[in-house]
Length: 268
Ligand code: SAH
Image (cartoon, rainbow, N blue to C red; front, side, top):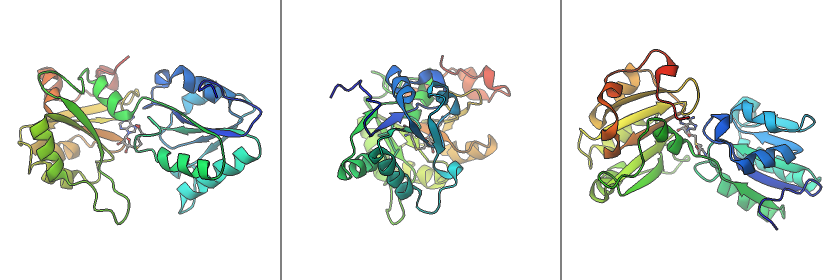
């Protein structure tokens, strides 16, 4: 089937990346999918402004915490998607950022395929990319970073999670930028682990609400990460960036945080 076709009359599910927050960062393909949906299942971090592209008669269901799902929200959402698709609905599952970056999109695709539901995926701009771009910092740079690692600070229950010391050694040797999602609540462990392989003076930046009017950021060194988070009261959703690509941030930006969000260099 043509990847751009979203047939209105046959049940299907399209996982759509709604981007980091700024509704202008939606792809054209995402807009088309939203406009053709009869049912939209909307995740917590999706900006409701993107729903302006939905048909007036479309059913909009907020899932995730804001939607008040019970203790097994993921199972509930997967069941709902299958149920709606099998009754002939054109379902769009709107997810923050990109559906395949820490969005459980892989699990959802597997579940839908197993249930015999036609599924498509539309990329979105992932928060880590938007966060760094909003500071006008590149993720890779011929002088500073040969690659980039997207990594989560949050493991599922029972999983020991990321080996930060090993990752730091690898990042140091291979000159990689680290882009850490969901890292705020485990920032102390992350900082302690990374300091085992990266120098304390390695630049870090924390970007909260990337691409949105309320975006804030702070720049520091790895040795100052946790202090900086608490001094500036930065919380979720935030991206923590670690690496020498941040050396390029202007000294004036690194000195302090502006009181007004508009003063921050939010990408157009
Ligand atoms: N699929 C999403 C990530 C989902 S995990 C994506 O591709 O962006 C949720 C985490 O993403 C948050 O805890 C936070 O670390 C990050 N995040 C999402 N939106 C963000 C934003 N606007 N600014 C900063 N971080 C964000």
